[in-house]
Image 1 (cartoon, rainbow, N blue to C red):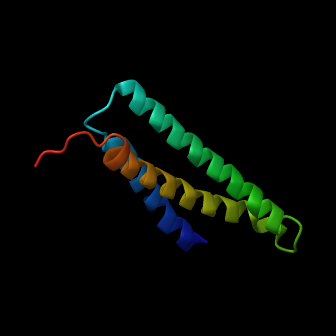
Image 2: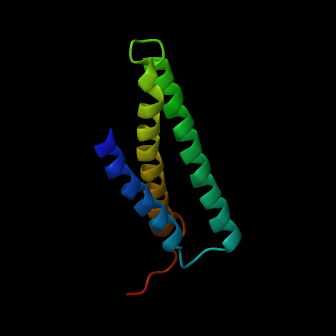
Image 3: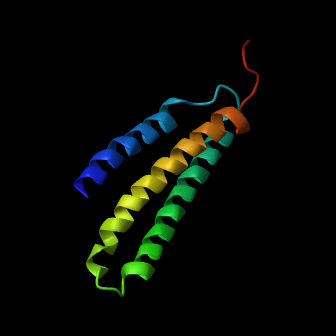
Length: 101
């Protein structure tokens, strides 16, 4: 568990850094902000689904004490994936604009 946490915390940090640092060059500020809020809502919904899933699966078994730990580790992975995918979609698809050659 410690090894997983040691691997996932830098991954979340990298995902948050890329999401904040790499803004699109085109698009209005309101549209970009709305997209960012949408990505964050998807990340929160993914974490809620992950927690519910682990509660359903391990909440009634002999491993019921571990479901919060497993849900937390999985949520770190979900947040990283959603933020990185959201950053890539935001910069290369949704707000791509005109690229310099």
